[in-house]
Image: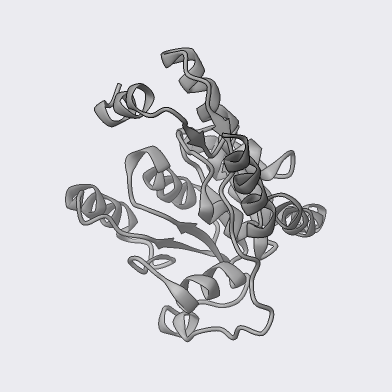
Length: 236
């Protein structure tokens, strides 16, 4: 139990959480009733152009899997790197976009895992047009986490109509509904198999891209979520 978690549960009169999983957690462990209001994003601007990040790293549209997020253990980028290497996929690269200045040893370990495979690309943290360009052009977005709230990066990938290879945990289910390519968290072999499956069966999976975009548009845009905040505030 983290101190800040305890403090949140004990000291705040009203608590908003971003997923039903978090709501159920606070009810079970602290007997606190919380209100779920999901994470929100803005839909991509169709007029936005790409940055030069693909050229900088030798990437091509639909030519790479993308991990985008903090480099921390509970998000399992190490499992993803090992799974990618074990998959023997040669026509798609793996891009690890993220950083963590607070855990340099873990970041160094990830770089060591990637050594010997020039198809694994580390970009460091990316923002703005670089981030949007990586999302827009990836073959599939990977979120193999053990624990999540409701990841903004997942919703952003969905908003760019990308396939999503996601750990089968409640928070990811809340984001994707039934339309993820599901993997078992912390299962390297299962993840490697699903990476191969996405490549080999893309024609059967392509319809998920539109479904992901539509789900974000219908449930997770700021106009929808801000209305929920407004209703909640009126109810207090």
